[in-house]
Length: 103
Length: 143
Image (cartoon, rainbow over all chains, first blue to last red; front, top):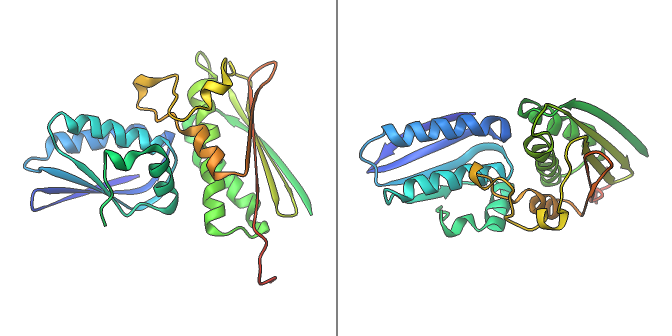
């Protein structure tokens, strides 16, 4: 599981690449938090899931955890390019209500 | 044609990818669509995650996984010898998690129910058994 990021106009784009499950979740949490803590100057975050090849409901927990963290500093997180299954899980869990999907 | 397989592996997170890919490989001859394959992999993974996270709080145990296919019907059973679930009805409620401090969504069983045709959860004398089934759509072209 790899995490890549780039900053464009004060937006932090985060690309999650690989499989997000119970095994990788712990590292993903740690690395995302490190990235969110060390990057400076961004006002919002876009999670790009185009390269996420597997995700179950563990992914929802990971994303909600980051949402709570960023809510404290008023930085919204948006989701883009979810797979068909990720999309179904997000809709089921109401995730888009707190982390809207953008195209 | 009827076919079946059974494996037992350590209930540790490292084995999740292995287990879901075993399921995918085993059902490939049934010619599932990519979405059906993803549905089944996701549902199985949820069941295995449950065992890893909840079944063995004080020790490392094992996950038993059995797959039976019959024509285009797939039945998958994931069982363990752990502590079981005290209140199954409550556990099946969307968003319910017994570990609210661990960033868990409580959506595992809901995902299994939605991605498969049928889901059954029952306590055994020792541990829990989750059975789920799905019918693969037959190839309309008939290749």
